[in-house]
Length: 46
Image 1 (tube, rainbow, N blue to C red):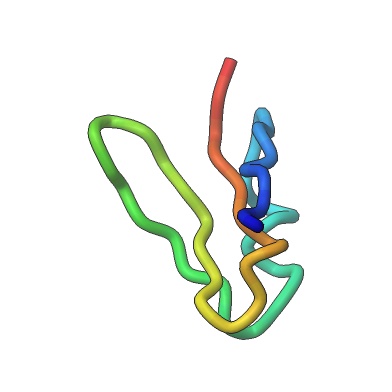
Image 2 (cartoon, rainbow, N blue to C red):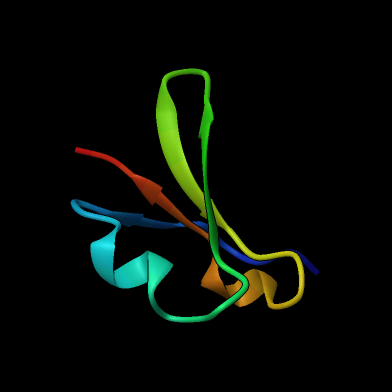
């Protein structure tokens, strides 16, 4: 069972939700990933 990636206008609040959150760029998009707690996944969109 995978977690859904939350799409946000800004990742400022997403990256500060947990200590293990990391910002990565993939294919021109900015993502927040968290290997320990995958429910914190987010992507910058719009």
